[in-house]
Length: 269
Image (cartoon, rainbow, N blue to C red):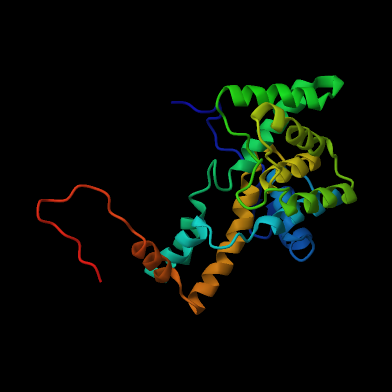
């Protein structure tokens, strides 16, 4: 199947000759190394544009907000993988990232799509409340979850939400999507029938879309941030290994509820 129209591979990201490496039109050695932060470089790589001060502040804040998340499934997968293959750090990192999807790490992207749907629906009138009610109602009618709302621990607003919104406002970012995110939170009780407060997966697209970050790259932000967190956990795993302990805890709690052959009995310690 032909996916795109190009028959010649083209990229505007990088080229080089024997003396110079060019990234997004800039001399890597002379204009970027030691002169641009990694956050700004990430923005440049993704968008092809140098970030505004607001974009730098917002992107940096989002990366800090979600780099570490405790012993969540992705971290456990990484640490157990490293325990089994301590010579393959890259495999352990990959094990933690491969689970990125609609439940873990991917909600920022799906919430960004939701916020953009509402912005388009509101049109020039910018009645985000009415548009939010309409779109959330469509999601509800289709049996779809409202991405970025509700949290198993933070029943009130996730504390990272206010922190990120404050950074965006102070930096002078466009707050359109923040207002849309707030509008969604306000209509959820009537439409869904229960309070579901903003979580960090809604705050991330709300602030990033306001500084020109593309929707198609939103999932990359938690992936990049979580990679840093995983490397931190794996460095600790080398010093204080718990990968097999995590496996042992699962085995100890394991309950087999399938069929057994006649006469089979389990051994109990």
